[in-house]
Structure formats: C-alpha cells, structure tokens
Length: 373
Image 1: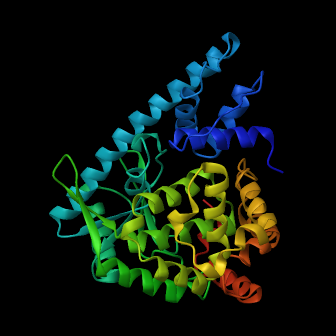
Image 2 (image 1 turned 180 degrees about the vertical axis):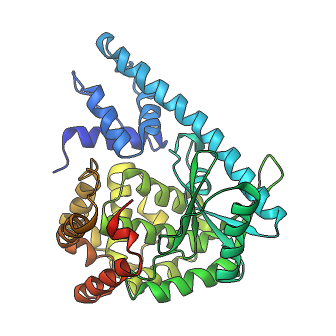
C-alpha cells in the first residue's frame, strides 16, 4: 500500500524535479521519518529541493533541528560529489596516460541529466575499459598495482574492485553478469557492440577525457541494470529518476522503436512500462516522453495493479540486515530468490529452473560469493 508518507515523498520529488504540482501538507508531518525515507530512496537532496518550493515554509519551530540536519546532509553530498568528480578525473587521466580509454557507466554521467547534478547521490564509480577484452583489463589491473600500489579484488564475476582515494571503483568486464542468466549472453554481445559503434566524450577540468555511453546504449543499459536490481533486491526512486531523466533529456537522440523491441526481446517490457507509468502518475512526466508503442497503449488501465505493486516494492526491504556467510548466505539468498519470482517473470525470458541452476553454477565458480568476506 502506498501510504500518505510515501505519496508525500513522491510529490516532493516531483516538485524537486521541476514538474510542478501542488503539495498539500498535513498539519503535522514527521520530518525525521520523511528524511529517513528520502535517504533510503536515494533522494534526500531532490526532496529538500521540493520542500523549498512549498509556501509557506512547512518546517515548524520544533522541526528546525531536522531541517538543519537535512541541509547539512545535502551540503555534505555536494562536497562528496566534488571529490567524486576529482577522483574520476584522476582515474581517467591515469588510464589515458597508459593508452586506455575509460568509459564511465551510470552515476556521474547520469547526474548531468538531473536538475542539480550534485544533488544526485554518489557511490561507487563504475567503469568499462575500452579495448581488447581480457587483455586490457589484466593490463589495467597490473598497472594499478605496479604504479599506484593498489590491490585489485578479482573475486567477482563481471567486474574487479579496487579502492582509489577512499572511493570504491568497479572495473566492469561486462555490462551484465553473463553467468547469472543464459539470456544475458546475447544481451552482453549487444551492449558491447553498441559501446564501440558510438559513444560520447566529455572533458573534465584536469584535461582528462572520459567516454560516456551513447543515448542508444544508455537507455537500454540503465533500464536493464534497474530491472536486474529490481528482480534481485529492489529498485529505488533514485534509480527510477536516473532512467526517466535520461529519457526526457535525450528523447530526440534515442531510437525508440529499437528500444521497445529490445525490451520485449529481453523480457523486461512490462517492467519498463511500469517505470514509465509510475513516472507519469507520480512524478509528473508526460507519457509521450517514452514513445510507448500503440500495442501497449492500454497497459496503464489493464495493469494498474502491477504498476502499483512495482512502486510499492521500491519502498520495501530497503533496510536490509547484513547477509550471513556460508550456508546461511545460500539459505537467505534462496528465500529472497523465491520471494522475488513474480519480479523474475517481468524482467527475464529465462525459465525459473534455468535461472536457479545458472546461479548455483555462478556461485560455485566464485566461491567467495558464498563464503563471504
């Protein structure tokens, strides 16, 4: 059920995104609870931006401490963003000096489509090194160790992990984990082909060049990334905003017929349609932005229950306990997987049995994912 508190959060996100609307605030709002919810959803800054548009100011005298805490958090986010940008520039320069082109995935590139870029939270830095497959990745890891003294963790399936200036970096071998689902193999081939067939470049303040995915690749990749997160653990409102704002800002640069055709082929068309309708109903985006094919024109009325279920899931299970290691991890993941089967059916084309055995094999190939740290 979408509670009043969740609806308030969505209205404030809508206002923070500049999509207007009226926010009828209750006489008494639990601002600390709203702040916690905004943090869980990755949108504390954009919600505060929305609050600023409410007149008169909704913060009562007793809530000013919460407001000060909230403003302080946003200011810290802005400082983190500047530090994050500096780290990206240094990494790009390092790779560039060694003849390697660095493609930046998700995060920073998507933040440029937000009304206030540094109001999008930053986390890990996700990169994809352009070049000859395993050869460039192994060379890059070796360079990090020999020249910067950085130890690289290679215990993961589709990316290595290292820390640079306190920031975790994921160096992706693949755009998607090809070991978790059989269908991921052809999707990965598609993404790699799109990565080299066209991309965009951006110059940072230090003169380093970063490569960004083309809108054609980005729309599919971000949708797929969100879908996989949704099916495995859950999607946040911040992830929804990433995809929606990308769609709106680059609408004219996207081959929409191809996009929806690939969504259908990947098995995630219902999930993507749910994202579009949530953005329309709750965040104030016109459906025209998404160029939904006529064949899906009745989805909003025929699948209202599914749309609401996807939205409710965004607000569920955000406070997760630390997962156990060993056998406990396997049991916990099995329970989560079983509870998420309804999500699997609107994201993947793979059968449930095929996925189950593929993921068992995936964990056995990388025992660290079972044993834990």
